[in-house]
Amino acid sequence: ETGVTQTPRHLVMGMTNKKSLKCEQHLGHNAMYWYKQSAKKPLELMFVYNFKEQTENNSVPSRFSPECPNSSHLFLHLHTLQPEDSALYLCASSQDQAGSGYTFGSGTRLTVV
Amino acid sequence: SQKIEQNSEALNIQEGKTATLTCNYTNYSPAYLQWYRQDPGRGPVFLLLIRENEKEKRKERLKVTFDTTLKQSLFHITASQPADSATYLCALNTGTASKLTFGTGTRLQVTL
Image 1 (cartoon, rainbow over the protein chains, first blue to last red):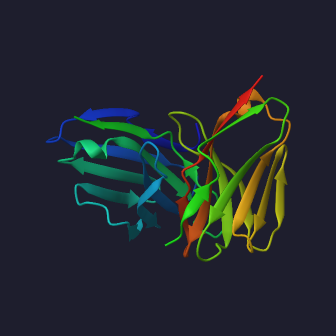
Image 2 (tube, rainbow over the protein chains, first blue to last red):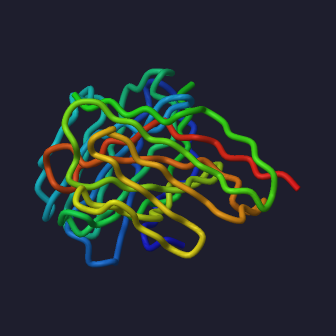
């Protein structure tokens, strides 16, 4: 365990479903992130939260909706996804100060059918 | 926007040799550069960070260099072992202090 826990580990959903990914950290970090990782592509930053305020939305389609109720929890709500959204979704946290490494969760492997 | 290139998609070396991975970037020099290790089906794990005013950083068998003139970082693993086999990712901060952009990674395979 890295200190960042993601659930579920695997998720298969239909294009009309609504599901949520959950991320939790108890490292005392102030910043949390959602990244998407597809095969042969670099990690793509989706959203950034600092002190539970969203500071970055990297042109992510509205079918992805983040929620950060407090500094320790981060959600990614999914609805009406497309097959090309199938990927590994990674949550990370950091101290949000220059030079602090990220701590990643193990990710959620999402398959959209 | 910042573009990051890691020298090759895959690198195969023999156990005991030194593995050298390259990370090149375009545009402006970042304040710092990080290296991560990623195993299949897992999230990346932070290894080392080097700042723009540092030339070299070491941690056990790992060494990172940072050349802002060449816009390049080299990542070395000395006395490599099969357990070092993984994908290694280079990441740079982009503007906002804690916002990182990642390269596609180099898959290292260490054979006996």
